[in-house]
Every structure is written in C-alpha cells, then in structure tokens.
Image (cartoon, rainbow, N blue to C red; front, side, top):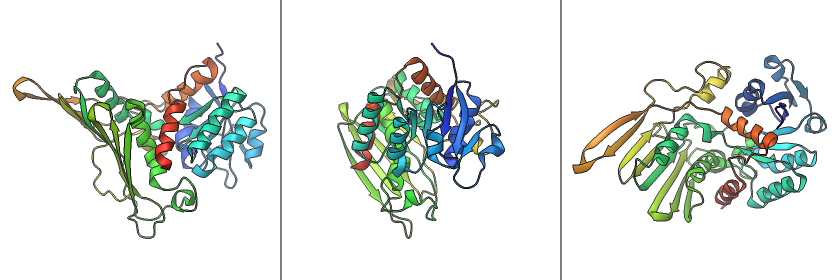
Length: 339
C-alpha cells in the first residue's frame, strides 16, 4: 500500500479553487499541490509560492508528474475537460454537477473504467456539520419510521450573477437547479437512495433572469416517506436547512456550517477550531414518549469535515477503496436534474 502523496493539478483558481480545493491540497498530507491553471491574473502564487501557474489546460495535462486533475471549471465544460484529463492518463475529481446530461455521465465513468482511472465527483455538502448531524439522527432510529423530510439551501441575491454559465439560458447546466439542486439531491440520495418517483417545480423570480432561481423537488420513497428539496435565491428569512419528522419525534437544524466562511477568511483546514459551529447552533430533537410526553434534546453539531472527501479521494486512488459518492448516485442525480 502506497503512502506517497498524490500529485495534483487544479484547473482553475476562481472561488471554488481558492476556497474548496487549494487549502485542502496544501494541508492534507495525502496530496502534493503542484500546479494550477490561471489564464489571466496570477493569484495562487501569493498564497502558495511553490505552486506552478500554467497559462493553459494543455500545459497542466501535459505535466507528466500530475496524477489527479480537479475539474472545477464552468458546468458546461466538465465533460470535455474531464474527458481530456482521463485521456491524458489522469484520475479526475469533478466539481458538481458531474456533467450536464446522463449520457455524458455514463460516458465519463465508462471511459474511466476503460482506462483504469478513477472518476470521482466532488460533493462537499455530505461533509457539512449539519448534514453529518442529521444523518446520524436519522440512522439512530430515534425518530421511528420517517414520515417527512425537508432539506433546504436558501440565499438572498437579487442581482443577476456575473458567472454567465449559471445565468444564461443558452448555456447547458445553467440555473439554480444544477447549482444548489445538485447538493440537495445528493444529500437525499446519499441517505435514502433512488426515489420511486419525483415531481420537480422550478420558477424565475429575479427581474431579468433567464434561468430558474427557485426549485422545489418532491421525492417519493417506499413506506410513504416524502422528501422535499427546496432552494430559492430570493429567500430573505432562511428557514431550517434540515427538518425531519418521524413517528416518534422530530429533528430541526439550521444550516450553520462554518467551513466555507472560514476558508474564505483565509483560515486553513488544519487550524484549531476549523469546522466547529458556534454555540447555539445545536439541532433540536423532540421525542414523544408514552401518554404523549414530550422531551427536548439539543444535539451538538458534529464538526464539519470537507477533508473527509479528500481523504476518500486518497483512499480510492492509493488503496482502491470505493469512493463514497458512487456512479449510481450521480446517474440518478443527473437524471433528475436534466428532467
């Protein structure tokens, strides 16, 4: 079993590269952060002076030492760039959504198998403190048979965003459903699997918007379990991100994961207190006893751990472990997003 760090290249150093990837590649001992593509302004070197900044994707792919490429470019480019990286002999970790269509997803995983390379999809929201907490409560069985589950991810952003690939209707993979919807669908599938059926509603509310900025997806599961996924870009008062009702009780938790804000502020993943939610962020667990006696527990938040995803990438490449975000998970997710 090799303990050699995985030499890694990053396709872009925009928001996701700066916040969600570079800090982990530089602090997780399983990785060597070798290079990044920066077509215009060279910013990475100010934080990571030893990292090579290439002008083009071709230069990155031609670097023979690099084993893993992180594809963190616009949604509509994921398929093309991941295909090129695989054909260059690199494992790939692809930002969500994996691709725009089910056919593209199948082609990527088929190509990875054919070449003996790993195709892995980056779903960091499985490693949010709130999601870790709600998953534990669900799996504990303390809520009894589940009746109703709500996962939400709300924003308030009236102006049309500057990222054209998210905001232009001609660009495949646009809109809120492909953006935040990918997270919520993955959250649901990772716990409950593929739904028996679903109903998806989308809407446009921001003045001048070409793409959906609201969605509500109703997933139906066996035993009459209903799961609701909701997100909007004009939600002024954010509702709890996690609400679960079962025959024996309820669990309610706000989305208060601190990792993104900490990373944006320059706090590195190996810093003390990284991923630890502030006091008052506990989830509320309400359990019903005999004679409808109600007890309330405040469940401390688990530590958020995006590093868990990078550890999984390491174990997959170096030890041939099964990556936790499976091909089936992604196939079901994209089928729903593109419908």
